[in-house]
Image (cartoon, rainbow, N blue to C red):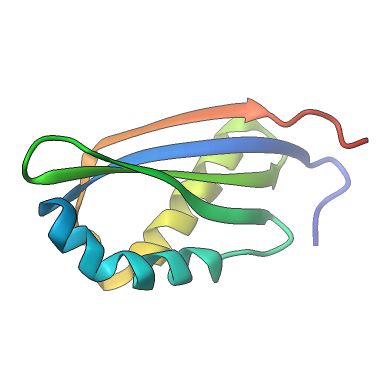
Length: 110
């Protein structure tokens, strides 16, 4: 349930995946399903938006979702929580220190 004072934010997270294309290919389907399972009234349409090679041993994975939250900080925290839940026991496969985020207020529906 979305609170009446919640604003919708478009959140994009970008995180490097260790191991290159082959390693990412082996876990990408499981991760994408786990990310989609985070959808709720607060986390809307979470998905992998793009994948790009970053050197031999990294793939940068960009995620996008809409988050209903009272402010930007809570929107980012909620998106990060959804990512961490999707990563699950495979957190070591991600270079969390490389993460970046872009959070913007979603355009009004209509």
